[in-house]
Amino acid sequence: PTDPRSTFAILSIRRAPTGNVYVIRLSCIPVKYYAMQRASSPLTGFTPLATNLAATPPANVYTDQVITTQSRFYRVQTR
Image (cartoon, rainbow, N blue to C red; front, side, top):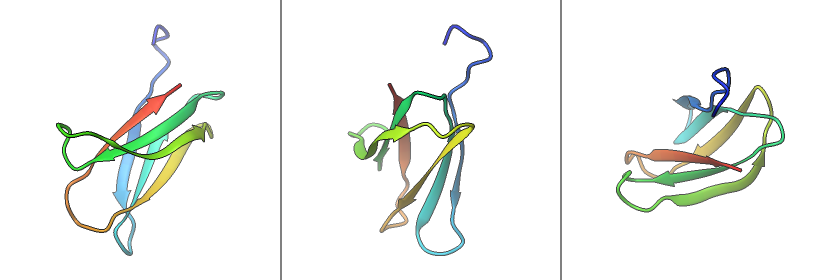
């Protein structure tokens, strides 16, 4: 970004109290759309989880239910 006040970041990733559910909170900008992706390693390909997620300022929240306790890596793309 060219605006120093503009930030884009994953704000938090927290495991929900029950089940293998992770709640991902990220900063967002109005009129932007986001895509969430996940991988078991940052060196392997990322799998799309959701696309065309509309911004909901001040933060978007995405819930990911996983089957295993294996490590997860998340990537967010914007357009």
